[in-house]
Image 1 (cartoon, rainbow, N blue to C red):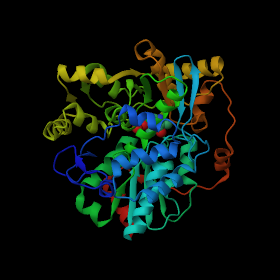
Image 2 (tube, rainbow, N blue to C red; image 1 turned 90 degrees about the horizontal axis):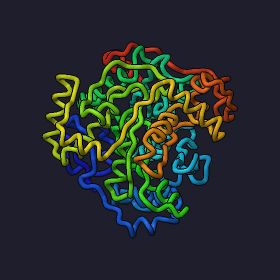
Image 3 (cartoon, rainbow, N blue to C red; image 1 turned 135 degrees about the horizontal axis):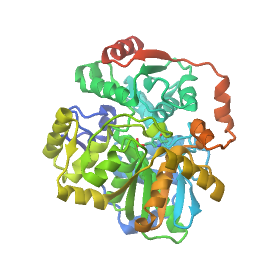
Image 4 (cartoon, helix red, strand yellow; image 1 turned 45 degrees about the horizontal axis):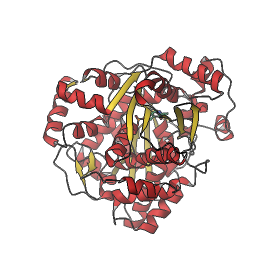
Length: 463
Ligand SMILES: *Cc1c(COP(=O)(O)O)cnc(C)c1O
C-alpha cells in the first residue's frame, strides 16, 4: 500500500516511511492511496476472529508485504498483551439500543493505548531493523502523552519529549506522565493550552530541515498508524454485536477532540463496514459540532470543561476528512487550508454540507449535561461513565431516534478524571495501578510556550 498527501505534493510513500514522516513534507496529512475494501463475505469470515487476529487482517490491508506477516503478528500480539481484558475492547450493554465499547483496558486507562502500544512497538521495530534513531515529540491534552510515554519508555534507540499544558491536565494524567523516570523520556509542562503545544509541534515538523536533522517523529493522531489502529475496534464492535445476532448496521457515538477517533470510524465505513450514523460528540469546545450543523469550521475561544482531553479548538485530523469530502481533490484541500491559515475559518457550500450531514450527526454537550449524564447512568444503570464517555453517551441518547442500535465509545476509565466524578458526588475506588502513582516522585520541567524555547530544549535533549 502506498500513501499520499492530502495536499498532493507527496505520493508513493510506503507504510513505514508514512509512519516516520508523520506530517507530510508538503504540510498535508498522509492517507492511503486508495481505501481497501472489505466485502460482506470477508466480514462474515472475520466473525470469529480474536481482536489480535482481526487487527492482523486489517493492518495487512494497509501494510501489504512491507512487514512480513509473522513479524506483524508478533507486533500485534505484543501490543495487545498489555491489555487487562481478554477481548481488548469489550462491548457492554448499557440499555436497550445502546452499548458502550470499553477502550480503556490498556496500561494508561484511556483509548489512546490501543494505537500507541502498537505505534511504540512499531517504532522500536523500525529502530531495530534500520539502526535508525527515533526522536518522538508530541503535544498532549493529557492522554496521548501518558500513553505514548508508556509505549516507548526504556526502549532502545528511541527518545521521547511530550509537551502538556501546565495545570490543564487531570492529576492522574499528570502523574502518569511525570512519574516515569526513564532517561529516554522528557516531560515539558508548557505555559499555555493544548492548542499552543500542538501548534508548536506542527511548526517544528513543518521546518523540514530541523525535522530531518533531529529525526523527529510524530505520535499525534496526524500519524496515520494511529488512525489505522483505531479502525480495528469499529470492526470488532460490529462483529461482537453480530455474534449476538444483531447484524444490521450499527451507529457509533464518538467523543471527539482532534477528529482522529471519529475519522477512524469514517474510514471503517468507507472500507465497507455497515455503519449507520457516526455521531460526533463534543464538549463545550463545539467547533466540530458547529461545522456539522452550519458548514462553518471556525476555532474560537478555548473553554475548560470536565472532559479536558477534548478541550481542543483546532482539530488536526479534520483535513483528512476534507480530502474525502472534496472527492480526494488535493488542490481543493490546499486552497481550503490556505484560506484557513489566512482567515482562521473554512466555510463549505450547501451541497457539501448536505454530504457532511449524511456522514455525521453531532451534538455539543454542555458541562452540566455531562455531569447529569454521569449521575443518571450511575444511579439508573450502576455504570460509572468517565466525563468524555458521558459526552458520547449523552449525544447518543439525544440522537437515539435517528440512529438505531448504537455503540458509544468509552474513551477513558473514570479514575483518570476523578476531579469531575467528585463534582457529581460519587466516590470511586481507584485501580491499584492508579492509586500507586500518588506516592511516586515527578520528573518534569516548566517551559514557556514558544517555538524557540522548545526547540532549544529539544536540541539539548537529543544531542
Ligand atoms: C483523545 C481523547 C478523546 C478525543 O479523541 P480524538 O481522536 O482527539 O477526537 C476523547 N476522549 C479521551 C478520553 C481522549 O483521551
